[in-house]
Image (cartoon, one colour):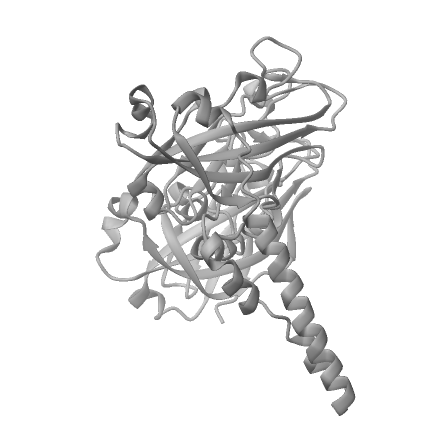
Length: 419
């Protein structure tokens, strides 16, 4: 996922159902399209209604079976804590997959949350020395379809919804034989071609669990030849729903371009206008730049990141994120971090530089023959944004690693739709 928006690369599947809410969810999701497509004949109407009721009952039964199976996918938790372990939430088919490339992927194949109580005294440190707590266990799948080995640490982090807390992975709550690891070295970092599965567990206090609805789960980038300069793709970032509220939040995030406001939980975004099928292409010599789309959103900084926005005052803010695809068919290496992206306001009112702190981190050079997704992010005070009638985006000049401008310092300019 080169890189793509979360909707393209983090396929957010059906959320596991909580025991007390499963029947309500099944009823709420009763299909309606069958009744709308019939020919309004009385007999057909009765048949369609009967089929809807039967389908609803079958769906409810399936969800009930799924959520009440109660099988603990990680028995090591009970062994290591000596506690009483109760399964409270299971998602056996989340459908969360990230493609580092078309041949290297990481997937969350299943995840489960358990409540732990009545544990040994020595195990309480996992839960800030409290009497009870929660553990989420992920079943992960890593697949290498390349013709060579891939090096992968399977390093992860989990961040709370509001960005204020890092949760802690507990390797001791997973049996070593069940870790996600490669088979070519003692450290488990070298993965020969093939499919690998393993578990990871994170702990939460009771208070943390009650605050969470869709934390962010981030995976490191694999490499070739154990060389950081030969990274494959971009970080894998998932919103992991804990409940119905979390599923709704994850679904909204999946529709957003993957700037750092989304991936790093810096701000909550509410889209008010987007056009994602612009696909306008221009060229700087043999470099093709395609403006794929734009998104405009009202944003609210998360609690942990409010300080980043103090220069914009206390009023509401608007973010513009423009998505480009860049294909380098030239003979020059282009340093991604040094690509200039400047917004032109109402022709002569002024210009605005993009907000690098909110854009995905770009590593290295775009080599000849390579393509890359580039996001440009701009912030406005909402009252000021309402004054602008026309926005243009100047892309370029392009530079090499010594900051030398390439291709005779040329740039291209795109008109951005605003409504």
